[in-house]
Image 1 (tube, rainbow, N blue to C red):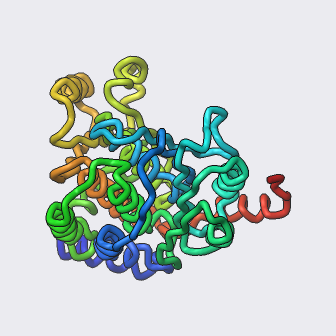
Image 2 (image 1 turned 30 degrees about the vertical axis):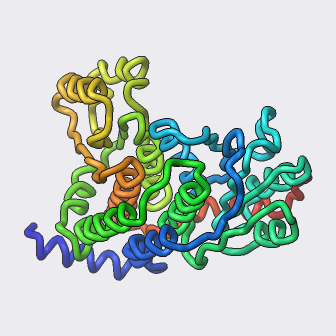
Length: 355
């Protein structure tokens, strides 16, 4: 099948399956990111926190994990991602709470926010409205930051993570970027987005999706890209309805690699490895050894491009979005449909949550 035929096939599948325009939302990622990163937030909090606790789950939770990875690599205050009800036992008001719920109604996040405010904590919340807005606007020790609503949370990473980065850079919670650096980064990501587009791009993403179709997917990542590998897995889960696994180098060399030593584990599997130019030389050596050891296993190397870790993360996340959407279409699935999650929310809605 030539490129024209392949493109026509994808266009037809998109027209028949993408009923809620996940492709359109994904295509708007660079615009959303630019809006979020260039907005003047006018935050005047002093940076005297011991650390930042990030509350959020699902599509609203990846940002906190990414911020933690950036802090671990580049410095700044410690960031901890919390994906549960309540708060960690060690938390105190000297830790700023960054609560993210795209809808503003995520019960796990709201539960933690209520407890933090009761204990005298400071909360910065990000949502498109909902109960989170109501709670924080009624509390003098809180700030509510609005992001545009109306799209699936997992497709709103430009709005969500862009706003989180802007907050952290503006408040000095992470080492900041000059406006010129941010502008150059945004322009590079805009160009990359055009290439990654599964309809108007260079076709590479669709080719990868065809290679991994009907295969078990195993994702490996360099340490600082562990969250990108995890998010790629969850995008396969939600968008494409595919079970996938993810692991991180070098940790996987202390456990998972043993399973790869059994030949039956190498059948009907496709390996995806996320790398970037900033990873430790030793990780590069381990990656090469892994590729040699797993010779014969179909493998795709995904190079997350950028001049800093945040840019590489954004590139890798956007790449994962397009890849999972292409996989969904090849499987005959609407990439927006999440029936079981909606069923769970309906079930839990009938059971009161004690605050």
